[in-house]
Length: 406
Image (cartoon, rainbow, N blue to C red):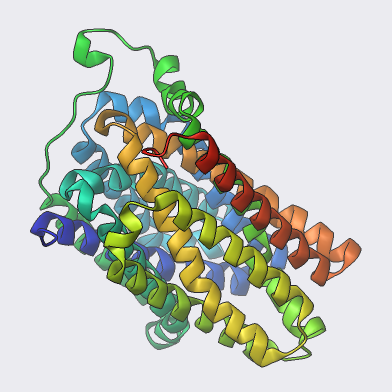
């Protein structure tokens, strides 16, 4: 059994969106930094982005209830294209005369629409492939995402230096247009929203809380989401600000080693995705054991990462963490896709995405404070403990659920 044409079109759209997003974000960060010379103002770029994703995620269930997934996906991507067009056409005026605030406002609009397109794409995927192929489909999607992001962040600086800010913005716009065209060609069967299928009228408030309610009412979704929140807090240790301190203070290396470790991690995630695809049939019936193994492996390697002072060992651990992260993430994603009905899935993803975006933003602040107060090693030991807690929750889930659910 092979993955079909519609799946590959969605894969191409996702890859193009991610590439455009990386190029756009990197160009905007460089532009804001050079225009203001302020680390604080430059730091507002990710903050504005998270705020927009949070706000759009809160109202995404209403949009998803009122419109078919295809319409939401294409409309939200068109919104992203519109804001990219405005930035590409008028970035000089915003940066030099109208102020950086106007540029950040356009960034907010761009990210706001992304808060609708991402859950729509995630909910469309399981409608394009048989359930028996979801692990393989998720593995290929994740591997492609990681490959594109690695290439984007690695080559983005070269592209900006070569074609300039203006050319980079227009290139991102062209790539987004290609993504929209690929998404337009995807065909799938729409699912009628739950409740409305029986002629029941659903209020906006009920729609907004529907995804949250579905997660809370189902034990396996509740536990997996709790694991995601815990892991999102732990993942704050991998941001550049903390990693650079680790490289300099613990390893005694320069900033070039930060780049090496990022490259090793991306290489690990790519190889991990390929391994998941290779062993997809074995993982399909063992999703919870895969989550347990992934979380416990990440915990052990994060603790070792905190304790070692050897640069080669730290680099090897970054490489080995990639497959563990991939196995855990793909198993968690597949559990949602197989436990949630087609009509509810987009709203559940919107609720989950809103929660995780806020959690990660808080995590970066908390982990930064821990690094300042107790040292960077303590930060990674804390993260290792959180990953261990996540794995223990999965162990408890396996014991309490019937065998056929685990």
